[in-house]
Length: 100
Image (cartoon, rainbow, N blue to C red; front, side):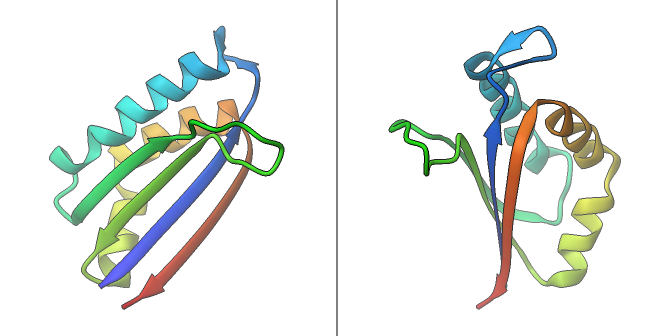
């Protein structure tokens, strides 16, 4: 099983919305993906509740069967729509993928 974790720091204001408004839109978009992309085995999205300079605003935790399934997910048009929006509202992104 492959675990895929991504964290983002969001801009204070982007695309006509505040950071919290964009975080809510982003969370909703990400949470809609399991119904559209069958390779996703599990997907959770969290909005940070304890702000600090070291904290990121949004975290995505997801699980895939293997690297091939993750690759299909990453190239899926539904995922690419979310990624396009996120690219406009994020300041920073970090990711880790690992097999268990």
